[in-house]
Image (cartoon, rainbow, N blue to C red):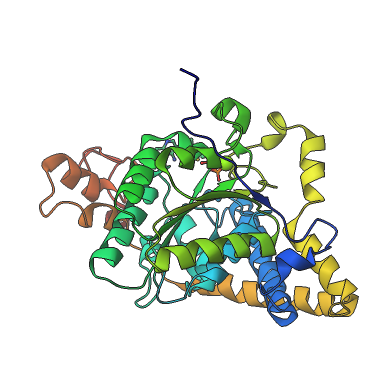
Length: 374
Ligand SMILES: Cc1ncc(C[n+]2csc(CCOP(=O)(O)OP(=O)(O)O)c2C)c(N)n1
Ligand SMILES: [Mg+2]
């Protein structure tokens, strides 16, 4: 008996606009018009400004740890722009702020989150998204569940979930992918393959040549896109979202991108990344290529750029003012929302929280609260 081929597959890679701002007209047809590209460029610059300022807030002690989004904005904006605001549901990790802002999250919420204020996670009514998710991988299961609910209720809605390359090594990823495929739920899985999971490079993280091919095991349509190309990301997302909305089940998009900054402000990527690699990716920055495109079309110039930079600075300064103007939460909050009745140890911690020695007996000499001193 001759051997037969049981299974074979090919995965497409899409780039519509290259790093010089040159567009493939056939692939670009029917995607975004120039006015849309112009608006999205300006939005991207604003989001970059917020990201840079968030970094500085951490460095000056005004905010906790922060993971910069720098370099990955096209992946966030291209996917979110293809989805319907207020109808489709975004389920993020922590490196797609621009998508959340586009779908209505006020910018200062993200700052509140990283300032350690839980109110940054209370998504305003009507904004269809979950809060940032720090445990790697869990959000993909939440997205699958949300999409399953949409399907059961026969609502024409789609869940989009974001995660990194490293997250695809988690069991949660495979459980979510399997369930989504078996139940054909309207979910789009968006992997931002930024080449690194903290200090672990993609090649060490997985043996497969692409991340997208993992979707083949679940018989899910999958595609690779230049994740720094707004048009390519938009094209792949539009197709995947339309398929999901019309009952065609889940899809997987691998957006090939790069984290231009450190993993978080607690990291120093110079310790493990080759500066030449970083330089090569700086040239592929999604903002640079959009600007080149708009300049070639005479839709943009230096004076417009200067005005945009100024406007963005003013807007972001206002966002910071809003976040910092909100009264700090009480330390009691740490204890108040988990147990109905605190056990003795937690009760003691709550009482001693305002002394300088957490958990110690507040009656001990020298540990009384500041209130008692005055
Ligand atoms: C369940 C879990 N394990 C480990 C961590 C620690 N951790 C934080 S980020 C990260 C790497 C994630 O890499 P990737 O999924 O590629 O996302 P990226 O940060 O590159 O956007 C790890 C291991 C975590 N937050 N959650
Ligand atoms: Mg990564």
